[in-house]
Image 1: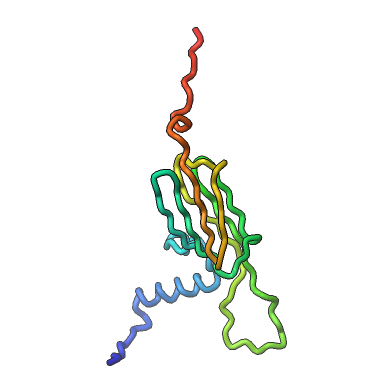
Image 2: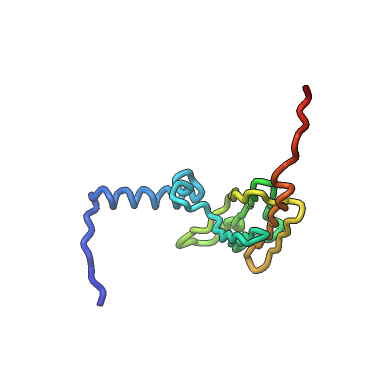
Length: 146
């Protein structure tokens, strides 16, 4: 059974929620959204023995819309999306689809960028980033000149 709960429009919590909703609607990738953890790019990161596995949901994008860069410190995923041109002849009742861009950097220590691979299928970007071998991670000993 559903119950109706009266809402006080002047309650500070309600006012704050309404303000957050307003900013999120007009600025979907704003600093406020980032602080709340809503970066627009949802990822899963799994650390395995010899590699990191990263899966990112990027629905509605094609592989050509993405820029993925890997270095020894981690991976950066950038993308851009846009909605179709607005048709002035159409009488929209609701228009929520937005256009914009996003960027997400994920720290993956001791990554081996030379052996990393990326696959894209059905709106999911999958990266396999191998870890560097132990001898490469330790660096090299320098001779000290006297």
